[in-house]
Picture 1 (cartoon, rainbow, N blue to C red):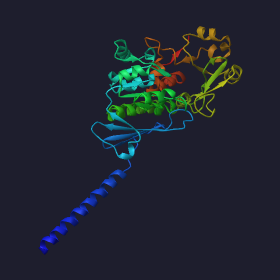
Picture 2 (picture 1 turned 90 degrees about the vertical axis):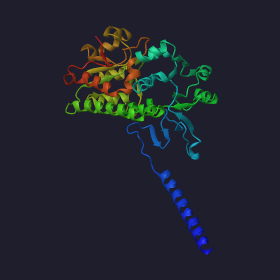
Picture 3 (picture 1 turned 180 degrees about the vertical axis):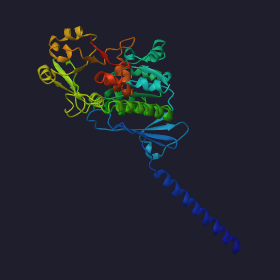
Picture 4 (picture 1 turned 45 degrees about the vertical axis):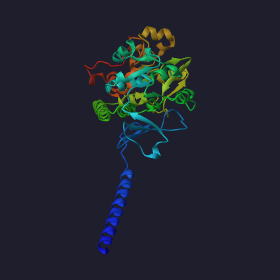
Length: 380
């Protein structure tokens, strides 16, 4: 009997040790720091764990007073209790509604455009592939960004609505969530790094279970962008550049840390407002712009002008710029899809390598003699 007791004691002790060891292993496993797969985008992080991913959107709009965390849960999997307080989204998604044309290329690159069931103001979509889906009724027009048709969205019952906010007041977002719809706030438009904007494709890779495909696509864009940088590595940034145009008696120029300014800097040009601190744009009077940029070599105009005559008709004072006289005016905004959507606004953010090559072709045409513009067009 004494021998049996010793054996039982040994077994109990052994099981206790094994149990404790397993608990320690579980603790160690949960303590592992998972690498953020995002490198360039400042407002996005994606950490993948076994069975789920943690997505954080840290800069959704200017002066945001909140950040967002989403848990992407693979089907049949579960997440730790500590993460249940965040919105849990089952992936891969069966269907999606997006509200910005910049999202359309990501869906198409990942070959999941058929999962799109709704979009606000579908005329804005330029892509021929997605327009086919719209024309045959697979993608419904769900209103406008500020006034989405909630009843229609409830009927569509998408797995997820990806949308955006512009400030700390988002009544539409609140209404969507109150209706039981799952919503994810995307902040790609806040990125100022060209590659940072494009890297948001990784979010869609995570949403549709195509992380590796998204990484491969983005890596190729990075390589292409860096090859373009290499082209101008030895070039001088001598060409002076004016940017913008008049809008309601104000001239909006891109600030020095903006997305646009970064392209002109990378393309080796002397953008005249590169020292203007901040992102976005700043309004000036016509006189102030003329005083600084009258003799600028190039003018990158905003607006959908088709010709110099049309540009001059909008404001006769434009002819005072040397770039107008020398016919060195370009625009990225006058190529459109079948229903009027601007191709640059839709595709440009996801293909910064093509945008950069257009700028290089403008400022250093000898480096890309046979290259044809993707977005830019010279006004004649």
